[in-house]
Image 1 (cartoon, rainbow over the protein chains, first blue to last red):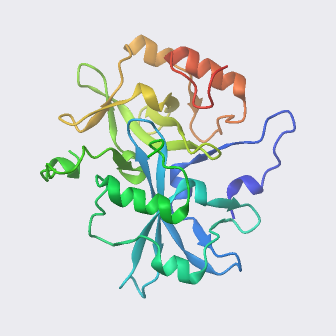
Image 2 (cartoon, helix red, strand yellow; image 1 turned 90 degrees about the horizontal axis):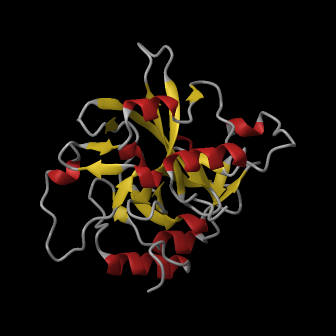
Length: 131
Length: 131
């Protein structure tokens, strides 16, 4: 559970819309049925625009072996305050065929054609604008 | 020095424009003369838009006492590959009167009027659009 659920928000303030990067890192991601899909490892930030490009989800494997990293466009993660987790509305089958890369092998972040595949898969507008 | 300076970038790829949040955290911030102003503690992300709102710079103090946190709009930090640090083009006097908050006391992130002060001080367009 996140800290901000423990303290009432003063009614004079607007809803708090900022979240710290080091609080996102390590947050669980759950399936619609509540089971844990994995954990957010880090955010990938577009240096030029200052947009969050992806949240990197560590997924699958056992004791760290065979684990995959999935770059998920930020717009496809919804934070659920009650669960204290992000919710991803993908089926297990979709999660298994989602674009991923092997941990400790660098995802080729400079390859725009792979990035287009990712955004096609998740059906969201890319962080760099239209294509 | 950052890892990506150790490996040549394949010429077939565009310049790499993404950076990991956990790599930004802990990166030094240096003044134009090269002296260290402080360290990036974390990024503050606008949940709705997915924009980086601020990089939080820990600044001043001695052995952790009297240290201040400065929320700096992302657009005002330039990464210098040679220095392996972010560069902030503020004088010491400006740095001392920059909007800051005391460590361990929550900055009131929900207060838009304070956020307007911050963006006025740094003379950058706010992450939420015009005001």
